[in-house]
Amino acid sequence: GDPADSVEDTIERIASQAVPIQIRKLRTYAQEHAAAMSEAGGGSYHDLPAAVARLIEAGQAAPRCVCQGVLRRTLLSLRIQGLRYGAVICDLCNESIEVASSYLWTCSNGGNTVMHATAFDICDGCFQRQLEG
Image (cartoon, rainbow, N blue to C red; front, side):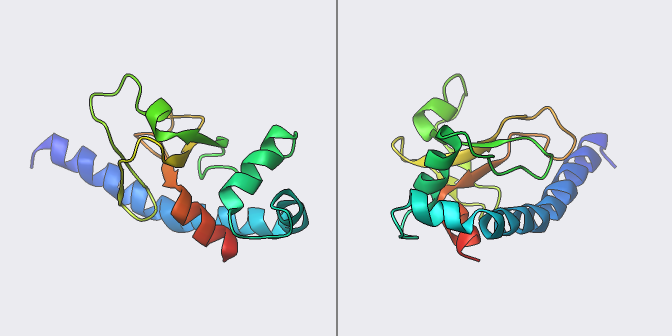
């Protein structure tokens, strides 16, 4: 077959294997940081992504990507600067993140790892759901 097909298949296979590992990493992070997240969220679990972002700003450990990179929360409008397209796909739910004012979590390693050939992005909705367990 076409070598490009096998490369694409390999990228897809690795990506599909990375998802359950990433979910486990987020749930472990939530267990290890439950008290701090509750405090940062004012005792509420309503907006866990914002609470975790506040923890990171205060010097707490950031959640880790499946590749061991650091997950950072950013605005979509900042994430897509310099890209040819105006949307990013969430690597957990495969939904397009299109609203420029949306936040997402992106890996500090971008596409510079075999674990994800393109950047690893998680929408705030998936981040919230996984932290809730």
